Length: 463
Image 1 (cartoon, rainbow, N blue to C red):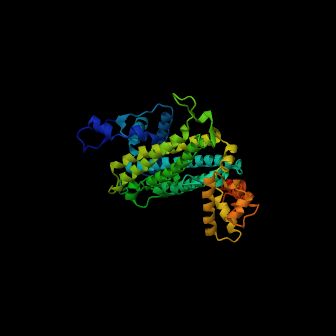
Image 2: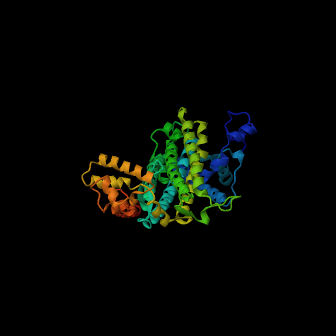
Image 3: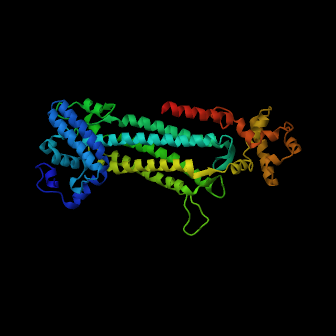
């Protein structure tokens, strides 16, 4: 089928070769071939079901489409640029296999609703795969957390030492982020899972089709109620890219922390050889390539979201060729998110080791227990703001003297305020400081254990 033959007799000459190459999408929309075949089989069955074609013809079409599927999987069907797109490629090969009956497949259908159906089938599948990956990522976070409930880590605000935390509590924050990601993709899935098949080019069709029948065959939850909206809607793709961008935000934040933790200035983790590389000239180095790449790849997913928004913002109804540009960015975003989730899951599971002794020592090297001194006074009747100001002065004088709060003598404490007693030392010990924060959602060990149990139950119940 040449470009001349592709179109109706309205055209007197074929496309210029350069324009044909510019216009073609086969080099990337071949990604949709399995979904195109599945959608076309459902369409053929519907044509037979409604009497638009005979049942024998419907069976021929379904069988021929299945043969193309097997040929593609075996590498025997590799359409080139002359096919323009995956839809024409399939139709042309189908006609070669089953003869003129293959030309009936496109009855009551347009490429506009066809590509919309293919893209939704593709994205529906990819969302489920990503949600499964998120669950694996969460399981690894929980496993590490469960083994590090009483491992302490400095907590930061403004990247300044703030208060000591349970390492498990820190990691569970990322569990919660990824739980929102999992739930968000579930919400997106519901709007992806609506069928545009049968909307035609923009106005529906004169044939007595049954759109709900094809939707049922393809496991769609519903059909588009407006044919114009059905062929031109890409909200579902934008929503997915928003969700994908947030997944990457969360992975990138964790990546940044891992990069910092691996630095000599922190030394909170050791990178294992299986997930790190070296320098070409500095033999002592071990580079955190995985989190750096995740951090870097985040930008490309953001870019695909922005590109899709720009594509859509000025499009009049209904379908416009601009929408051909929705696929490459969508495909790349899917592949990037999946690759980054896989890499980060491997990194956490087997590519790094927390240095618990270093972490536990780190929380004793600062003034992150200062709030607990103020709380100590407040619990004994001193107004908190008064206690806060008093402790601020203590920290200032201690820094000047080269001391930590734990180094002050009881006499020095009582000179600050007579309320202080010998139990102040236990009150400001890092382990006590962490354990005492037992409010719901806090870093106290009892709360963290409850959170881990709740998370595991949640994963079991939700699947």
